Length: 138
Image (tube, rainbow, N blue to C red; front, side, top):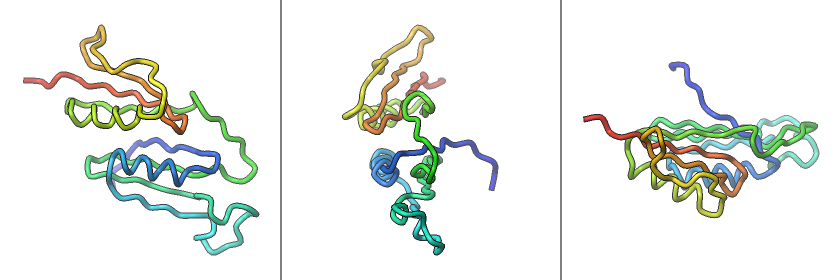
């Protein structure tokens, strides 16, 4: 396996719902493991919480997430953003439409001063997404 860099997002108890949503957006295979799946005594209230999940798509995207571990504070908002970029405008616009649906658009997906089409939104789970569509090189 080669090295890879991917986002790992912590959620305050809704990791399963969020990851199922991202699977609807991007497709792929989703593996979900709860605290209870690992055989040891799960902390009280954590048997069904997500200890680790990973979404891997045919396009090469990998997204990992979990519910906050016991005793840790969740900090939602500007502590993470995820960037999607490339030159397949139809594909990236499709992701944008799904991610921004039910969320908040802070920068509309439109041509920017640097020449690319760019937008930024926060999805319904509080995760900020940046989508950049570069012009295809001819």
